[in-house]
Structures are given as structure tokens and as C-alpha cells.
Length: 272
Image 1: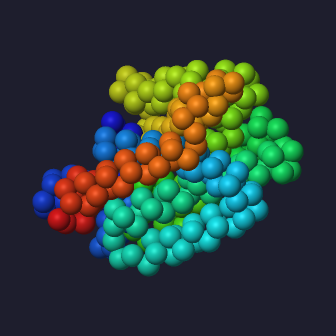
Image 2: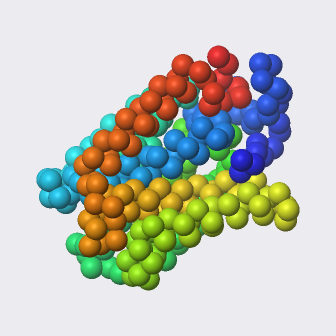
């Protein structure tokens, strides 16, 4: 999907012939945007939603949130210390962002009593502020430029905010607007196709299209995961959040293992 492109000063990669941003010769810390990227990303959003719900019920929101925060910090430290993109480290960090981002959005609603409409707007403003600061500092929002610690910090701040925003937006449509989980999933499936079409036919900037689609993967995956996991009386299939989380975890592990071996999502400047 044509959701991303290198922004400025393209360089030709010897092995693949693809283009990327050169930043002092540093290696990329994020994967190439391919169909494998989007598939894995959507699975992590669903897994984070159901896992967060399962842990909150099993351990309580405070304990679950504390464990989620510890796991998130540990994996982000590993990600920042890694010299280059590592599928296992990167996607494990994404999983923990998904789990903790869900917890953060749920705590704002359940504990603080903030309506989803308000938290959706609030997280949207926070995301806009993060992206504005990133662009003002670095002159680009392209993920192909994530090769310095500062850009990586902006990247992960953006990712965490998109997960919280997507969680709030998905719960807003499913609950507050009474669309239900399945209908919400269908709505977001339609909306996520818009940036690709806008990029192809209306000339929408590829970086803007990428982040638009990236935000929508969260409510897309979460809506369908909730639909599978929640009880029948809540409009779901009643499979349970625990079993759904387990199945999604196995699928994610299989995909990441495949990517680690095949290098299908290896950044253009990383080499085999």
C-alpha cells in the first residue's frame, strides 16, 4: 500500500534499489512498510485490546496497568538500545504499546469518568501536538527518517498516542454511538482505504496517508477483536478475551518469526 515514502535526499540502496533517507549513515530502526507490516500491525491492535481487557479483569486495573507500564518501559529500552531494526524487539514493543495504550484510554474513561467523545478529542489534540513538535524539530514525519534517538523518541511518542486515540475512537463508535463492535470494524475498514485512494487519485502526501492509516488500524483491529471476544448479550461472538488474545498472540509470533527469517520487512538501508 502506497502509504509511505522517503521524504528528502533519497539514496539508492545497493541491494534493493529502494530509496530511504540518509541520516549520518545510521541504520533504520523501523520496518519497511509492506503488506506484512499492515497485517502484523492490525493483529497487534486486536491482541492489545483483548489482552488489556483480560488482564484488567483478572488482576484489576491498577495491577494490570502497573505490569503493562513495566513491560512497555522494558521493551522500549531494548528498542532504543538496539543498533538496528530487529523484528522481535520492534514488534514486541508495539504489542506492549498496544496493551498499555488500551489501558491508558480505558483508565481515562472507567476510573476518571471521562466520556469517550472527550478523550477522543483530547488524544487527537495530543497527537497533533506531538506531530507538530516532531516536524518542527526534524523537518519530516517520514518513518524512513527514524535513524536518530530524537526521531525515534518522537516516533514512539506518536505511536503510543495513536494507540490511545484509536482505542478511544473505537469505543466511542461501538459504545457511545451504539454501532456495536462489528459495525464499527466495518466503518473503520472503509475509512482505512480512504488514504490509499486519496494518495492514488487526489495526490495526498504519502507520509500523511501513512499516519492516517496507522491511526485507523487501532480501532479496526480492536473492534473486530472485541466483537470476537465479548459476550453475546453485548453483541459479540462470546469467544472470550483470553482465548482471542492467545490466538492473536500465536499469529503475531508466527508472522514475526517469518519476517525475522525472510527479511520481507527489512528496511532499505539495513542489508540482509
